[in-house]
Image 1: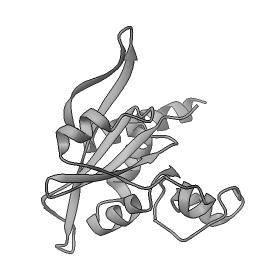
Image 2: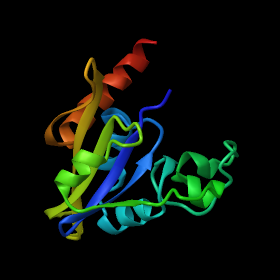
Image 3: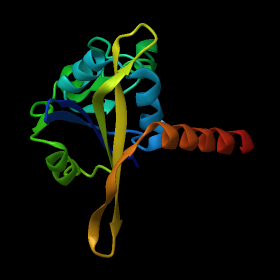
Image 4: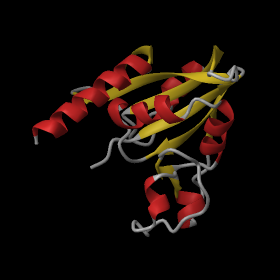
Length: 170
């Protein structure tokens, strides 16, 4: 079972976003995004390669999708198009945040993430993104989206700590 997600970046009003299959929960992918994906150019490059099996630390280069023994598999993104040759798995364009929230859950995603440029800078003074997310879940009424955009950082860190605590108990 996987926790599906969609990763987007705001470009003016429009948003480009792509699907991501594994570990999409805030303590997994969410934590990875705040730790490793603050450069807007890097985020954009990652999204523009389309739907992915997983995001890791770097965009990386073409890799054999099935070769889990390749050491690069554990550090780079793995894409359905670039790395497995699938068709029709490019990024999607949404007209604004409302459109992304309304239509970003169309492939079974539980979380959608959004990178925004809000004036934050990294330690070198370069622009960096601020991450937000929205969660959905299934109820008796079907799939429902809860709440509005929430800042990701605190929730991702707390959820990641909870995961680490559970691992320490095992």
